Length: 584
Image (cartoon, rainbow, N blue to C red):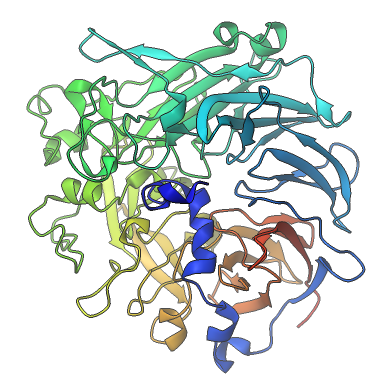
């Protein structure tokens, strides 16, 4: 990425965060005391890179998560590099099996940030084409995994959309230079459809206005039968802020409550079964919440197939909606829209910088870049037949929401302190404290979620926070379970100082205890395995490279694969480890 725009782009551009590994982070391996070096339950054996199996390296970062291809009868790790190279590595040796480049117009470069989707023996990639550093188009292509080449049945699809402005006067057009595909490509199956539907989401590039949130629904059957034209393949489009005017008066476009609403969380929109075959929960980023203008930034939207959306808010109590301070009764009335808010008695968000001293909660979210849509929710089915959503927020809070009526907020818990103190300035306030998706399991009868946190200062503890979801007087509530590292230990204010990887969960060992795996990024990152039933450290491995922020570790059998980057050379690679689950 052009270094001239780093300051702006870092706010909403996970790719640029890779630069932090060589700027601000030190080796996390050097931070840990003997307490964390106690004998592990699992032993990790490096599969590659080793002297016998040197790693395949890539010239640019691996920002999207690796995915697993089992369609050829053996495990292949699909590596989507950010320069548009898609490679398949042997799952045991790391040897290159095949490689292909995303197709671009002559003289242009590909940029691939979104995690691809695997559908049987097809790999769907979403990427952007750049000419002299400017995005000219966003494209979808299909790779045939049996032939290791582009699938000619699916002509490369150039995304295009325009939607009427809320006032009905102008038109909002999908604008490639200010749109950016951060989120994973998602696939859903629908009865009557042979291949199903794809969902491609877009946020913004840096803070450059105008930007909005866009979500494309792609009918794969129509795409296969069509000629590559967008019209038959793009079955529906969602625009989160239908505004043609996005004027800014501050340094950063995201700091004003206008437009915005980018759909950018790396895990992408979440798809769950429902009576209508499936439903999508779509978290949106900073911008304007204004029900009258159909602006749905900083919310969770529940969509039906066809991207059908009706907020379900009570028009009477929402008649005088104030974007800077929404009415509580109005927010609670919304069936298909969640708007974040503090609970009665919650302390206001007050960064030590004083930047929110004269701002409402919603104004503070925008000003500090604490967008709700940085993280993806997870749906939890309770034993009483009720379902809830757990939604982390960049501001360090976690919300517990009724999954059937999104306006009902059962709980909000601040699980990590706001970065910075008067004496210890937050190095990167825009990063917030949470960008992730919770992992879900259960202990006894209680659902448990684990959420990685981070803090860019030297004062506040951060790491993994486990919460039980319990019933109190018939209402779901959060109950703190454990935190790793121990928040009272020195390690807790030294580790997790920047975005870690996304978390992955696996049940391994003789007792098949669920274990969470996460990489703390550093000059040499550290891979941790933490047992969920008690928060005990059961594995620790110093990586060859720095690891990779916001990328899911891939687990297949007893093998774990993690994207990484070598300090100094900036060569990207996959690191693979075999987890010996027989050790006691």
